Structures are given as structure tokens and as C-alpha cells.
Image 1: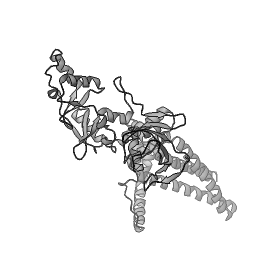
Image 2 (image 1 turned 120 degrees about the horizontal axis):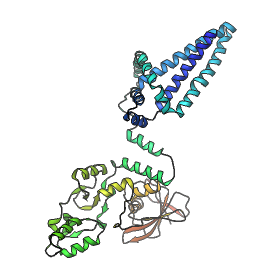
Image 3 (image 1 turned 90 degrees about the horizontal axis):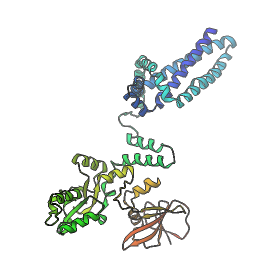
Amino acid sequence: MLITAGAIAILLILSAFYSGSETALTAASKPLMHQLEARGNRRARMVNRLHDRKGPLLGAILIGNNLVNILASALAASVLIGLFGEAGIAYATIIMTALIVMFSEILPKTYAMHNADRFALAIAPVMRPIVQIFSPLTWATQIIVRSALGLLGMKLNPEEPFVTSVEELRGAIELHEGDDEAVQHERAMLRSVLDLAEVEVAEIMVHRKTVAMVNADAPANVVLDQILASPYTRLPLWRGDTDNLIGVVHAKEILRALKDRKGNIEGLNIEALASPPWFVPETTRLLEQLEAFRSRREHFALVVDEYGSLMGVVTLEDILEEIVGDISDEHDIAVPGLRPQPDGSLIVDGQFTIRDLNRQMEWSLPDQEAATVAGLVLHESRRIPEVGQVFIFYGFRFEILRRKRHQITAIRISPPRETGGNISEMGESPAQATEIK
């Protein structure tokens, strides 16, 4: 009887081992194990190989766990039947259920859940031979399972994952906890890196309305004054019409030419110093444009629409700012595009991009139909609003503060909250746009 009790105790320990191993190996951090393997950790390499063969791993654990649980229950039933007769079956069921659930399931899985990486590294050398031993059984069970599912009209296709790796990364980023400014900035940077393959250059370019350009037919001294007055080192060069771009002038090339000419600006041929213009479609993705900047070893491109008209310019710095945020130097002109107010609202420049607003405030205003805040108001209101008009889009309150001709220059945005006033519906907008009169 003592030998049987000892055997039951050993079987319960084995059951706890299998249960804890299942939790630890499935919950272990894949990025951490990858890093440890890259540093030469052999146990991390074993964990990764077990992850790669998850079907045989789980099959071996389940077979082993059920074997020891059933054997332990059978031994307990034989002992208790000998002591209490037929009632021993009920006693064995109650006692073994309590022991297995408490000591072989909850206890080891709780520990493994809180120490998954450490536990996985510890048991990996033991689990590898166990998986190999049970491989014939797991192979046979997998064939039976697949056949049964096939009869029920279900097919398993491991090559089509439920979620993509990018979606998995986005979920991990959102789980990056913390509300302080540093953590929010980290989350914004990581989201932006993943967005590079989805965002088009039209969404981040400097619009042609604010692009500083140089007239090739202007006198050299006038061109030099324009270049010195501009905070940029590269300026588009046009002739006859601003859509007729013939090159890009670099301030350093002008300085070199002036040095060679001993400072004599008379007769300086600006066009000869300009580099050929590089045109890119407005639909180019940021990741593609970043790779193009690297391969061409250039930092400046002109953005055109489907008709070949100039839309604006995009630079390498613009793309980098999408990742790390605004990059300012001593020559940049500060534009106060976002000003928090004491009442919790924000006064936003009309040309402030929705992406930057979402990133800084951790909002989720849509940027599919419009790149700027003013563009969003125009798209959702289906009109050119007057100063003082108030709209509600996506739960946010937009109040038009300033307008210059047909351009909205300043908007007050209030986060979602209850708003008063007489509200009337405005069409079929997906935002359920409303105007407060």
C-alpha cells in the first residue's frame, strides 16, 4: 500500500511537470528566446525548436499527462476499493480529482505562467527527448484528428495564420504599458515604423503652397537673396511657370561657385548649378520612398499627381519625422500648430496633420480621406464652414476659429464629451457628423 501511495505521488509530480511545461513553453516570450539564441544560449535554441514543432510538442505533453493521470487514478481506485469496497470508486474519484486539479494543474500552471521564460529554459532539455519518444503516437493521433475534422468539413491550414505578424506586433505595441510621456513617445514611434508601408507621401509632404521656389530667370543676386532668406538648403528651380520645374538648387553648390569666382556673383548661371529634378507619384508609400532615398543617395523629391502637376515636396527628414517626431534645428521656423487650452480643448492649425495629432494625443481620428485637420472638417461637413460654426465628428467637437479666404487656418478641438445646443443631422457621413447651431 505504501509503494502504491508513493507511485501515485510520483505520477502526480509527473502530471504537474507536464502541466507546467505546457504553460511555460506556450507562454514563453518568442522575442526573448530569439535574442538568447542569437547570443549562443543552447537552451533557448531548444525552446525555439520546440516552438517550431508545436503540434508534436502539445501532442506529447497531452499524451504523457493523460497517461500519468489515468494511471494514478487507477492505482488510487484499486487501493480504495480494497479498503472500502465499491464505495472506494467514489472516494478515489473525489480524492484524485481534488489532488490533480489542485497540485497537478492549478499550482504548476500558476507558477509557470509567472515564470514562463525561466521555466521554459529549465525544462527544454527534458522535453526534447520526451517529444521524440512520443513522436510515433503524436503522428498517429494527428492523422486521426485531421481525418475526423475532414469528415466534419473542417480543414487545417497552418500556412494561413489567423493574424499577420504585423498585426501581432501592433497588438504587442498597444500592450506596452505606461502613461508617462516617454512610454507614449515609444508607442508612437513603434506604430509609425509599422505605418511606413501603408502611408503615402501625399500625407506627409510639404504642400506646394508653402514650398519656397526659385525663378531661374531672376537675376543671380535676387536668387541668392531668396536662398539666404530660406531656412532650407534645397529649393526647386522653375522657369516660365511654377509647374515647369527644371532643377533643384543646393545652397552648398552656390557657395562653392561663389568661392571659385572669388565672390563675384555677376554672370552666375544658377541653372547650371542645379541638379536634375526627381519626381515621385503622390501614391508612393513611405517605406518605398525611404528605400529610394537610400538607393539614390538623395534627400529631396518633388511630388506630382496623376496629371503631372506639382503637389509638393518630400524629404528624407519628413519620413524620419514620421517615426521620431518633429526634428528642429536653429534654422527651422517654429509653427505653433497645437496649443492645449486650460479647459482641455486644443487650438489646432488647419494644416496640422491628422497623423501628428493622433500621435501626440493618442487619438484615432481617421486619416484615410484627408491628411490635415482642415481637410477632415471639409470632408465631413461637405461645405466650406464659416467662422464660429461648430461640428461634431467621431465624438470630437470642432469649432472654426479663423478662416483665410477658403482656407481654414485655426480650429478648436474638444475631446469626446457631452455638448449642448440644437443638433441637426448633416447627411450620410460615416462619422455621423452633426452641426451645432
